[in-house]
Each structure stands twice: as C-alpha cells, then as structure tokens.
Image (tube, rainbow, N blue to C red; front, side):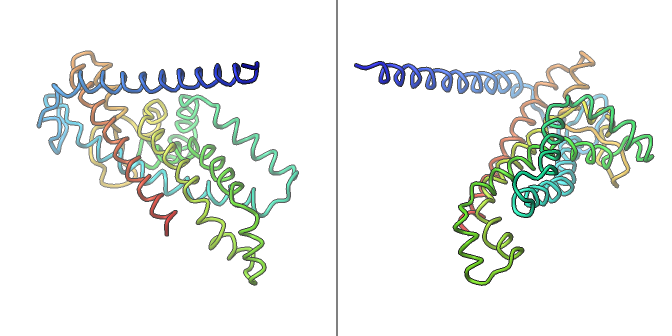
Length: 274
C-alpha cells in the first residue's frame, strides 16, 4: 500500500470521526434540553398574557415570529440585491467590491453585544425609536446582512456562465437574464443563507435586550417594547426562581428553530423545482 492510499484512509477516518463527534454533540445538546424542559411544560406557560405567576412565554413566541418577519423584510432584499450587484454588475477586480466585502467580513466578526450598544445609541436614543420592535429589527438587520450577502454571492457564482450566455443569445437583456435565469437557479443557495440568518435572529438576546427591551407583551405596533424567546429565557434564568420554566422555554425555542428551518427548506426545494 503506497503512502497516498494511507493518507487518504487517515483523512477519511478523521473526517468520519469529527462528523460523528459533531452529530453526537448536537444530539447530546438536544436531548439535554428536551429531558430537562419537557417535564416542566404546562398550559399556564402558554396563556395569552404574561404575569409573574404564570411566566407565560406566549407573548414571547408571538414577538419572536414578528421580529423574524420584520427583520427579514429589511435585510433579505438589501442583502440579495447587494449580492446581485457585486456579482452581476461590477467588474471583477473593482476596488468597490473589495471594500464592500471587507466591510461585510468585519461586520460578521463583530460581537452581538456591540451591535446592541450601537442600536441603543443610534436607533433607540439618536433616532428616538425607544426600546421597540422596530429598533430591535433594524439592529438585527445589520447583524444578518453579511451572511446573506456572502451566500448570495456564492450562490450566484455557482450558476454556470452558460446560462447567462444562452439567455443573451436568445435576446434577453441583462436585467431579465439576472431575474429570470440566474436568480432562480441560485435560490437554493440563497435560502441556505436566509435559514442561517433566521437561526441567528431567533437565538439572539444580547442585542435585543439593549434595543427591543424585555417587556413580555404582544405589541400592538412597531413602537412597543417586546421580549423574544431568547430574552425571555435569559430573564427567567437570571432571576433564579424560574429555572424550570427557562428549560421549558428552551424546548419551545428549539422546536421553533427546527420548525422554521424545516419550512424554509421545503420552500427552497419547491422554488428550485419550479
């Protein structure tokens, strides 16, 4: 057996080992949350209004869904159009592309607490939005822009140039080629970035505590303070009196992420087939 085959077997073994380790870690975390949280789920945790007695998470569930929808409505169009501009309309080697990509990478590496402080100073105080749903959504929109832009770029680059050349050969213009040929082919990859962004929105707490507040209520308008599931879990665990309810909230948070990701994956597949 030559050295190349030995190296291939070693790398294959290491790949399977670390893949299995990652899977086992995920299973362990999920089982730990489910085992500690499911026994403490009760109907009072899903009452319409939050009180200090029932510590209901229902307002937080509604608030989480609302902030996901609002944040995506801000960030997804901007991120996708930015990615389209960088790949389809700017010449390769352009300095503007380099600057935008550098800024995007820097934004991706900033801790969420820094985004929270920025949102507090700019959206909450300077713009006068206060602790509100809109302030939290705008802050999260900035947070999730880098992964959406990056995945859009990579998805568009993966589309063969033959698609573009064929469309141009049939007389289609640049805009029509991008939106009728290139973008639909890249949609599965773009949706992968959106799914990752959804996970970050749902699991974020630090930035929202500084911008959206921690009031457990179903907001009547965009200017009211909210408490998402992640913030709700943080508040309950911080108080020290409702650790069991915090575990129960973690179960609902986990199931919410799985549910939204599953729905997004199904939509992505249907778009790809269509």
